[in-house]
Length: 272
Image (cartoon, rainbow, N blue to C red; front, side, top):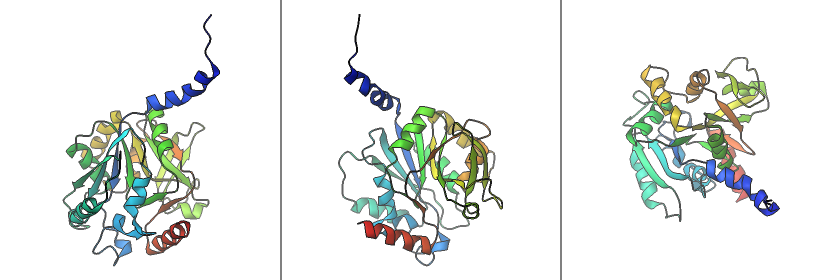
């Protein structure tokens, strides 16, 4: 008779979780013009605005530290601010075992010719030849906790996964993409900025797309669908493939206004 020690049994779940997580590319959407933050963003991109003494972008990158399955982090910028990101990357001190950071220029110069968030996502996938799973995050979203759990959840499901957050009230939910889910956490409805939300659960700009779904992103853009507002892709895709959710633990901030920027700066500065 063959016996397995309790010690071995105790590490099997961890080995399982490690093995199932696939190579993943991260794409940070940073090509917007942030007109609601004018005049702050007339001369610099929003992701490079500082909160608590560091660019927003650096706080986002913190969430992907020490995740061995992430080899590349792509940052897509517009042409107007591309040189700002080049300078930031040149000045950034090297980090041991950090993923490679790759910049992409979407060629736009103002609001009139921008590609939109989904258009930028499609551009990076095509230009960089990405063929692994993809995690997408907006360049103005801040999280309290690292995103290891989100990436593991997406790898387990091998279906698209949306980061969600409970804003606590239906009135607040009107400003976001609102969702309902079933008992398995699968999206059953998604509506962008509804006048009468069905719940206070919102989708945030954090997405996991397994590699087999990347052609669907190209299809969405090719068919002429709205290339802006990344939630539109969720709205379209969840009716075609199972689309799951992962609730963000702790703090989450979407820096969309001067008031939010000031609040986040104050909150993070107090914790420093």
